[in-house]
Image (cartoon, rainbow, N blue to C red; front, side, top):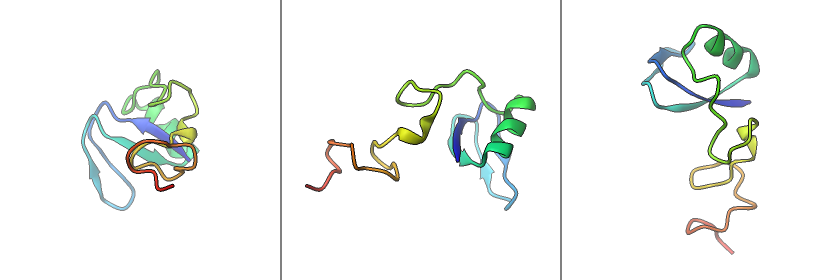
Length: 74
């Protein structure tokens, strides 16, 4: 899975609409198609500054093992 920052509105394959500015998790093929069509920001490096944004473990992230913020349960 990849996370992309939309720079234009996009409707996914299930018909769900996503506004510009939203970060969405998509498979790698969809991410490539969104980049190629100019719908997502190809230079966005994610909330941690790395090109691979799967390591994000902040609020609302799916992997909170390294997150030590207010939502972390000891």
